[in-house]
Image: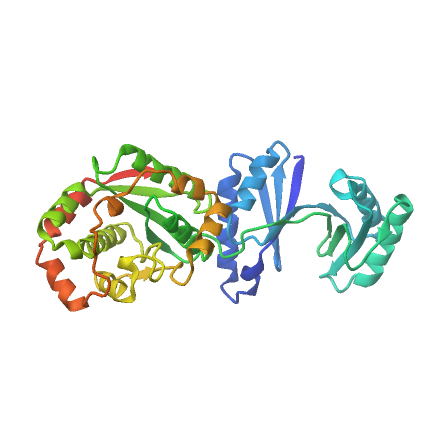
Length: 388
């Protein structure tokens, strides 16, 4: 089978101890699921993973698979040869004629890693030999060991691997290596970024979205599903649970004091999310809350909403400012969708003067006095589930 060979750098995974194989297996499974339907073969060495992919696989398909997979710090298409200097030199010269190496450069250097210490030449000697061969082949080039236009990388392992370009990966840990959590997904900027940040730490996720039709439009729902589609490759697929929340919100608006309504609504969302999370085998909740960004995100308010959950509530954005969050949203491709002008249920039902520093026990008494359990259970029974 004619194949393309890719070298994968694993980063943090390589630092793991006796459980490193579990992380490497998860990374392999995640990549393989994205490379379907193209045949591929994996092999592993310390700090590296190698993938041979069917030549028929489009380059765009491979790049998308590798660039959206957490656990990869970098990847390169490589050439492989035997541990013989004549063979290594010939492959280096072949690579030096490729456009991705030679185009638009005037300087280069060779950088060698000799993982096999039994190889008779040192890293420096290999680099010097190959550098001289390339200079003879391309006399217009010069060697610059400090700031070269291009680097030829050589790794001496079970065989010798050569490559001249590296694409930066996402880093982090493979999705599903840290378990599963329930993401509280809105149509705003923050929650998709929170999802991305926790996926980077290995968390598989499902998402819950609260839809208050007709007060929130079908366009608002489609906006959230569009955000979920953008997130899906990073999360190895995403299941979204759309909760009909209108009846709950109307009841709270009619019976709760106006200044408490945002906190009461948030508490109901947390309670409902936790119930669904437990049904779906999730071990934590994820929110896009950042400290003091809005009234429901003061320390006092967060203490109250925390009190409504027995599961851990993960807030990866808690110490970030809005500019930092927006930068990540732009990077992962969610920003332009998040700013579309379709309001969610939180915005529409917000009071003019919400409580900012609530007393936790007082708010808990107020919340439980509403007896929302039946409405919450009804909403759970009517959830629409979308697989992306």
